[in-house]
Image (cartoon, rainbow, N blue to C red):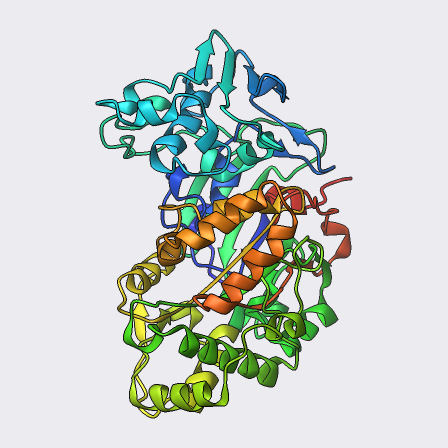
Amino acid sequence: MSDQSDSLASVDPYIYVITETSGPTSFDPLEADNTANMPVARMIYATPLEASEDNQLKSQLLDSFGYDPEKRIISWNVKSGLKFDDGSDITADDVAFSVVRMAYTRPKFPVIENIAGLDSWLKSEAPLKSFPSGIVVKGNLVTISLNRPVKHPLFRFCLELFSVIPRKCVDQKTNKISCETIPASGYYKIANTGKDALLFTKRKPGKIEGVNAPDSIKFEYLVASEVTKQLAQIPKTAVLAGNESMFSPAEIKNVEGQFATRYLPASRFSVVQLNQNTKPFQEKKCRKYFAEAFRQSYLKITGQTPEPGVFTKILPGYLSQTELLDGQALTEKDKVTCKSHFEKVPISWGYTKSEENALFFQILRDTLKALTKIPQEPIIAASRSDAADLFAKGKISVFNAGSGFWALDPSGDMKMLFTPNLHKALQHVADDPKLQVLIAEMQDDTKAYAKANRYLFEDAKFNVYAHPRRFFAARDRSLLAELPFAVTSPAPWQVFKVGR
């Protein structure tokens, strides 16, 4: 565990140990989809809506909210008297602007793409100085008019991407953050930083959403491969936040043997991405060959049967490995061709230093050892964001990723995942017009889920190999709260059971 700085040692916070990533790379809400930034955004920013501990929609910003499906109008009544932590008012204009920024940056995002007047607004000279005609602010009332029916539109506004910050903190020409420090709008604020740590303190005393929550929470970052070596050093006031995809079965068993462990449903998937714009993976048949070799290495190292479909068992469109392999199988000639191809063509790869011994890279090394005769030294990236840049630019050909879908609206999640300009490492997949047609079909036909699932498998750029669960573990079971299942990961403060 990291050493506490003098400033952090003066408090006795609950500790949230993050094992999936290193610290945040940005405090801009538009970057909050990054796994490293997401938990920090959830602590310090409010979103228009939130999923509560009892899996209901609630809001710390709104007196009331609703959606009229006949009129296709979303209505939000913003509370009076709310403040950012710099003392300035949180206004209805600020709340609406959280939607406007997303509309400007990612106009093809689910729900956003259906806002009335969006297209003409985007063509205006300085869009951020105004709102689309479908977004209207009158006093404390925000209304968002949609140009077509949308199922469950309110849940989208729980996402950290819609975090509310002062409109004054955004340059309305460039859409860049202009404040040196962005004032917090959420339940917590950043009180201090230390080496490999962030300390958050509650902005107001008392309960959150009717339940007790820690007055202070310290984020510490511990590489997954080091967790089992340091279990004895993790204090009783800590909750370990992990993802099965980062740990071997033996490491998981070790954690479960010493810590009380709670799992979220298997709504997530782990992916090996292949850049088709690089020489090793230009041909689909050889991408499929590599992906299957990777899944075999996964089976060899973990002893677990691969799950190659993007939809998990709790979702429509689930296809097992047997069902997916029953499709367009590689011929023996294809296999010989691709085997020869990978023996001749080097495959560039890389990772961040903290990922060096992660399970994914154990599997990748085994795959490369089996396929290639021209080994390449890995490129060491400074951060996950830098690694994504390297992959998007074709400097590395292989990239590890993961995501998850809400059971409430997996079709919307699929559309969100492959929204153009949302994830730079996914742009080469999101630009596929055939995939976008299949995703559009999913909005109205659950049978299209399986079609999209099979297409991704056959196309072999976005290769799912496992359906891991997120888990939370503590030395003392009484420290762990019941986990909300309406979202793929709860807010950090929701995992602590404080005097309940």
